[in-house]
Length: 221
Length: 221
Image (cartoon, rainbow over all chains, first blue to last red; front, side):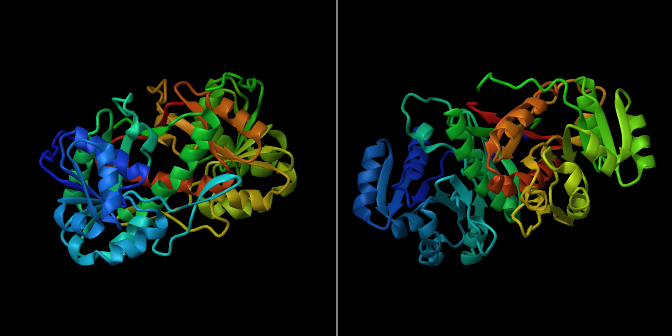
């Protein structure tokens, strides 16, 4: 892999819909890595509660304030909230790197399955709603359980980073690599995000079968 | 992982559309592992040529003879030949484990991308054409270049094995693990095959970016 990694140490990170386990978990790890983290929610009160539960240099605010203030913004809403949240924050997110980690999944008795998305994927939907943002898809497969577990120091997986803007994907790869054990690996253009999002359904099946918190590593890279 | 692995050492393996690099590569590795391998093609002559080029205990015959004779049959046709090949071999494949490794991909200047498949995936298309076969999806991500390279003794990847028939997926996991370095890992039900097939487009992007022959490993399993 290239060692020409941008310095991202001073970047502040906002997390929209950050009161869920995925958002809190990512917030916790980025705070441990020394980043200023802003957890966003529709309700500023719930965001502040979540920030307090995470601890460290983490603040809570409503999604709009977070989108306006943070250097880089992670979208970690439930799939149902994806479109309305982004539609309401178009101006605040203009010009910024927006990292979409949302997995459009359905669940039934047989487990999880990938949902059809009109635009192809959650990330492509984000790109179509936010034409002035630099949308990158990443952090789909990292286990919220592991992110939140204080006993877990290193997380054994590669984060696939997808996007059409090289500088943006390089930045997000560098951010992913700030979490001990994690490596950010370029994973293709945004048009190939669907299968990376959908693969989370397979991970859920794997976790069930093997009683694991599975992730993926890319070999020969 | 469970160590309760079925003994597959005596299983003969047929490869439909086996004259391409993927088919020849898999045939080579299964022959090295001691399996009888039958390479199939529409043309028996081309199948025999391919078998000869692979060497070892590998024979060539037309697809119909291979489908009738082999214990387990791998479908390695180009995507265009997938449906017609399977439709013509419904009787021969009845009752057998059919391993689909076909990736429905398109290519343009920007690289590879996943194609839409009416049934959801190549594997689901196979299952719908072959209701009396036991369709399993596997071997999508293994590099034909590595499979064919005589310098490469071990291949560093996990083969995701998907299907709805536990005995069949266990058998295919065991078969995958016959290739040195490779591990067969259960990857979910057939309805989640689409993203595993499509992920081959991402691997192609990764290979291009990193000048690699990338694969995936599943962590914590």
